[in-house]
Image 1: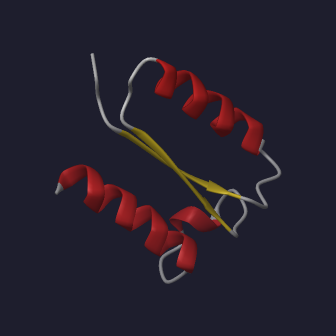
Image 2: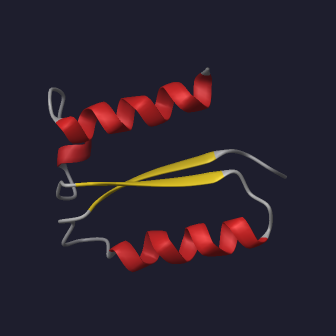
Length: 67
């Protein structure tokens, strides 16, 4: 089953290592999955904080999936 995946990962995230997202993307691409990873300068929670650049990246990923 091919479902598009968008990952927005904060480069300053102390809770989830970037290597986890990198590994997922690498494995998904090997299977032909439509996956994109965007790295943003943010920690773990800023991605869902309205008004931040990280929030804008999160919204852009959602728009990309629903367009």
